[in-house]
Length: 317
Image (cartoon, rainbow, N blue to C red; front, side, top):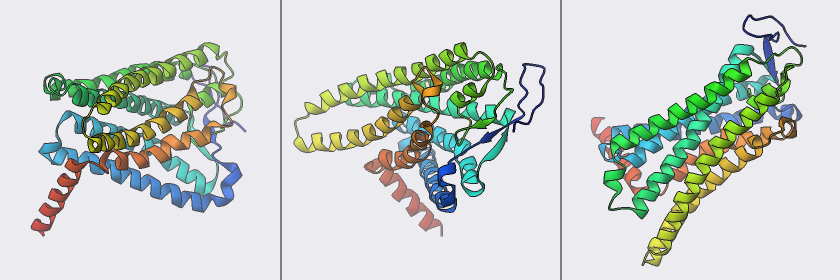
């Protein structure tokens, strides 16, 4: 049953929503809670390690690692916006969330998610310049340009998502209040509205498509040029090493873009409400857990920085 009230700024009468979660597997709630808690803690610790080591070691204060630490910061924020509520759902079943809190969660999920995709495009551009234009790289991608890129990613995401969430906040919610998801998904919110949502659906479809396609095009162009450059390396060992690193990055990119295209790039929201929860878990649990490993496992500079940090800790004891 919907709990209702009336606001002055629109005709909304629903005071809170109910997050349905995963009712079909609720009997496994304790096991799923433990699995997702461990994945969440590992993701946060891995990404925080990247941030800490980047800013603690001056050798890593270069564009590549500044972009990576910004990416890790967004990943931490993104999963922290979603996972704690999911853990409560696994323990206690469906959960209520106030109307304003739901809109706030939807905003930060989309804002941080959009920033992550723009930062991935910036990271791909950085790798393209470093590998394909090594002589011009220091002058093109200096620290000032790098910081401007990061600010641009945040600012563009903020403008896009603020407009979309504001549009959704103007809808009327006067009927069902059960969200068939484990967080306040914007598409599910639009679907629950009793207003005419055609213009809002098309706006959401257009803006999210722009975020995904624009960042994907930059990433594909950058990595295509990187692959061509790698193919011309004289040493087979160098080619194998480069392809090994690129393939790891491309696996993460494929998971993130694949799941997001499946969830969001459909004009009709009705087509996806029953199947997007599982796909959303890929971006909220799987890729945040893989990213610290993928981006640091084969990185000798990070390994050396970690060894030096551990050595300094031992000396202080």
